[in-house]
Length: 282
Image (cartoon, rainbow, N blue to C red):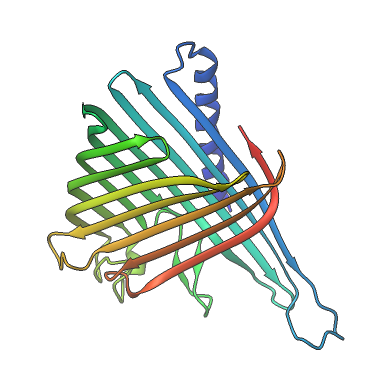
């Protein structure tokens, strides 16, 4: 929990600094906006309920913050994503983690011609809290694993809601604490190692659109091929966020993520979170 508190302090320090910059930025090269959501789920059954079911309560916190720069022929888009969720099932003494994400995306572009830009991108992903398997064995924790990607390329950007970045020379670094690889590989890092370096090609796409009034869908797709090891096995990370605005303070959110990384597990990993709760935009 101490690490979670430190992460929250770090994030809100960033938000405070950028908010101060906004107050003094009279030319408006920076565009900053964010959304904080608190989502709650609850199910309850009495002992006479014949259909079966287990009472439970769950909560999710989410932060989605964009701070983008645009001046003449230069664009610099940045997005911070923070999510954390817990659930408590009746009769179970332990509280289970349902969501845990820290992600930072940064994409810099200098106009080449038309809607094309020379680009450099950076991506960082990790988690805040300890992860447990079904046997309550620790399998992950803060900064373990941690993923980094960095590379030059070409960006095609039609507008703020539609863009594709091609990076044919992308470096990727995976970091895992040595106690997770003491006996077996973990998150693609070989047994006995604490990191894995890859070099390959990356494609990142972003598309956001409205399907009706107050209902929007945000799509993010990252494809990565490692030149150094089975380049035909492409890593896939797809994220979809559906946002339904009820009013200025209430919203419903659906988040779906699908990951395929054969170095970690030769199967598709799927995560889905749905909630109704309090929403605040800034």
